[in-house]
Image (cartoon, rainbow over all chains, first blue to last red; front, side):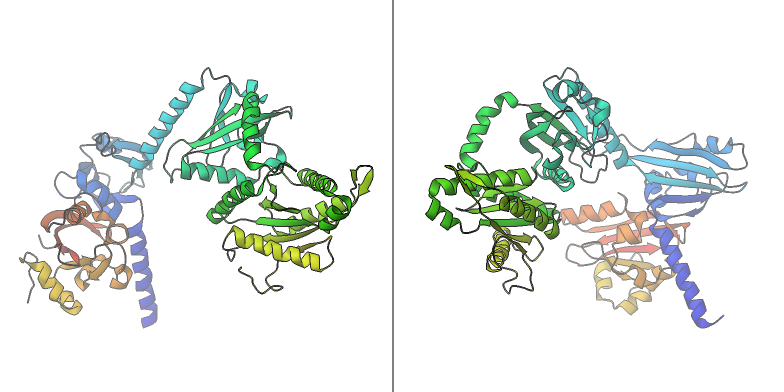
Length: 438
Length: 126
């Protein structure tokens, strides 16, 4: 054998050795009477604190105080090979309430042949703790679910899928439990009112803030709408727990909606068009950008500007101009999804922010709006007014510093559309303009 | 020249030694920094564990090198000393799993607030 081959083999051996040293579960090989032949470090970590004599010669001796029947089980195991015990839980101590958790080991023992036993030991303290918390949550949920009638209480898994719900589901939403179990909570939303990313956003917000609140239209099984108030809260704050669930409470507050809606309208609506006003748009768009920074995904913004609008105002009068803006707002409401944020941000300037939508998708929907507007006539005092629209699209990326920068990109594209003859959509592109990262 | 596992004031002496001098000792020496990263791994220890120093240096001691010591008997003592800002010099009977064989050893655990390195000394002689 060449010197290189020997060196390679030594390296392989060393790597294998380290692999077993680092194994995150305990592995022990013993003779039939428990004398330890091989043992890896995790086993020593778990078993040394149990050892009475300071040594680890015999596995059964080491576990004598916590699993006294082990030796007997191994000895009385008659088959030539097979599983002596599988994932038996061994309680090491009771823990100190509020200070330390009860420590538990999981222990499996397999008889390999007439001479060898193989044991697998792992620390399941955390796992058991999580299971216990989960059981407490279940009990808590069961307790408050009984007798609920005017709101729906549901539990969600990590992905927002409904895992259980109260009996009030039927009276409030018209859905049967079978119809909603396993579905995401967006089953209560209109199809275009939410995106898969938006669904996850609210779960993450609940993780971060302790809750996520939403007031808006919800859908019953028969397609009818009700004004819902919905809160999602995490059931426990263990981030690493893939069992972690959320609690969702959905109330039908249609009766109380009017009062709240009037207030909302006065502070966040544009009076002429009843679209969102500038302030409300910035608030909603900032939240969308925060979500983007937390989990980047496609996000586009479109700036719209009515072409030659000043001319309409000047020649037909302001009431005609107002009618055009109202017609434009109505067209936008018809074409954009509920999940989109649409607003009037200037005189004849409108904006749409499209979650989970890339440049191509945004361009397509902007084009549809342009074609619809182009084909439309606005009747004012017996006169038909026709008008057109220009649009600029920008899509969020890491080079965009914030909302202002994104709007600036869309404005640059909008300017491009105006310059190229109006009644068209242009998309921002880094190659076309110099102030890319503006 | 220092060569006794039990020698008093050993932390200062180890700190003054070069790596090759530490390699001549006939007991294992593992030195870790405040973050428990292994910074010193002498050839005695390397030979018995079957691992070249390159595989061990720069790794966290209790999670990637000597998981067997990651319990209240060893790791906790270092943590307590660090939290309390106190000295640690204790010798305990322990079992290491060198090459997966249970080997009875004496571990001497040493930490001095003033010293950047903390040490686990390993003696295999009974």
